[in-house]
Amino acid sequence: MKRIAVLVSGGGTNLQALIDAEERGELGSGKISLVISSKPDVYALTRAEKHGIPASVIPRRDYDSIADYTQALVLKLRKERIDLVVLAGFLTIIDEQMYDSFPNKILNVHPALIPSFCGKGYYGLHVHEAALAKGVKVSGATVHIVTPECDAGPIVLQKAVEVMEDDTPETLQRRIMEEAEWQLLPRAVRLFADDDAEVIDGKVIIKEKRQ
Image 1 (cartoon, one colour):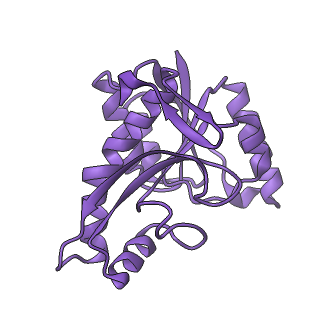
Image 2 (cartoon, one colour):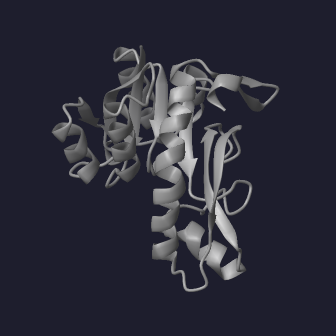
């Protein structure tokens, strides 16, 4: 069994997608063993409580530096014997301590087709606002491995979603969540929980049986 920690900062819709997938038996050898929030009183903590998942709050505001905050996260993750870390709407900067402690074991879902509309400043509705301003015909979501460079880690899975003429950032965000993010993230977690994916020469190689 691979112990999974999900890091959150808000409502936890991607956390819920992972919880639902686990309850359907779709995370393979993975088990959500811990939820960590960077903020108190967010709905993601309620989701964890409803499903009996241990949760902790490690507030960013309680730490003077990114280094101190990352150290606290790493210590907690190690104490709980975590094998795989998932960033699910986690909006706090972390440093190399995390990447060094969990090399190629940190996953993130980004609401666009990387390398489009990604990097510093591209998060939440800002991603969809930029996509609509550019007039793209398709957008989508990407699950990637987290590395020190923002949104630049090896890509695990991607899925395209059609952009409609009358889309707003909110409607596009919702469609990408439903048609891409909530499907891709559990699949990516299962790949790594079952050791069906590995990073070779900077690329994620997926074994045939999971493709």
